[in-house]
Image 1 (cartoon, rainbow, N blue to C red):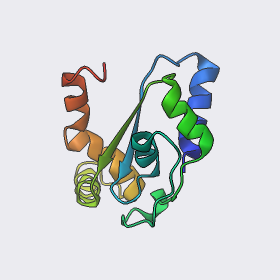
Image 2 (image 1 turned 90 degrees about the horizontal axis):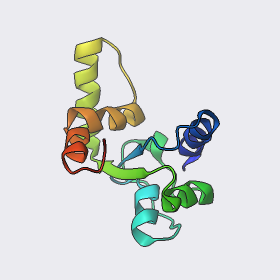
Image 3 (image 1 turned 60 degrees about the vertical axis):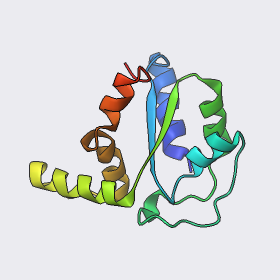
Image 4 (image 1 turned 30 degrees about the horizontal axis):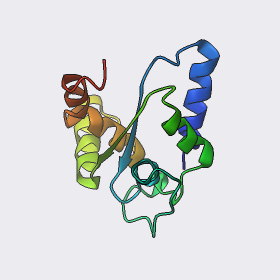
Amino acid sequence: GGGLLCGVIQGMKDVGWMDVPIIAIETVGADCLNAAIKAGKVVTLDGITSEAKCLGAKTVCQRAFEYSQSGEPKIISELVTDQQALTAIDTFLDEERVLVEMACGAALAAVYSGLISRLQEQGRLP
């Protein structure tokens, strides 16, 4: 858990984009990063209850957790439900004629559910 996040951050470092915030979206039940951030330490989930099994690490890697605590870059950890991810998959299929899996659906749910707009309205995202 957190390998993709660490890779994205490394790429951002390489091109000098550390001022760009990252929105880390997990589904409820596959939310090891969010759980660690809330606990203030790396934690291990009892199990993966989300249908998004591809997101299903029970423990976030130490480095990803450290990035989340450092504030550089700013990492905004948010959760969506499996239903929101599935709805986003269906909407994306209807609009783009491309079928994606649950991890992508979770990211798309952040857009389709209005989460991104809410973060902007709250001043948490430019």
